[in-house]
Image (cartoon, rainbow over all chains, first blue to last red; front, side, top):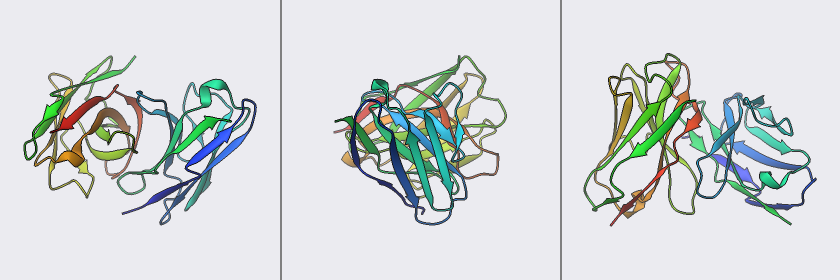
Length: 106
Length: 123
């Protein structure tokens, strides 16, 4: 099984800040990685697929990078709507999610 | 606009079978390039992929749940269904259905459309 580890687990930031969330895979997954945003009581929303491809309709302040075992999600100029929990997901071999990163307001 | 809607009992007894159906509207479940999957989330915890099915019936299951899971598809009703047997309290979760993008022979995919989720409690 491929394990996904996100860091940090919790992140505090202010509107206008830029933040980065890291996701590490237990073995190489090439670029088969997606990022999701989830708000309380809601379904996850796809942000990024294939490590760096922006899903249609997602603001350009969201960006993804990485390959192999290390990946990052960067949100530049945080907006009030961005405070949520973020998950990475590998889909190289079956599918595994990271444990999530909660982004809250400082 | 594609929409997915989960339905099924919100309470299941331990050792029994959890059964849920996802109804797809605004698009055909028989579209190529898409699988249809289930993901669950225990209260206050993270996401776990359960399995996915192609309209032809080809399935991929999470290896850790494979012995207890069955996913089926009914193209005439534009629905797919989940059965999870021998449930315990650990299976209490919000269950989401989703459209799963992957190539036919890929074991993994990512989800671009999701249902709103339905809470199933085992008690």
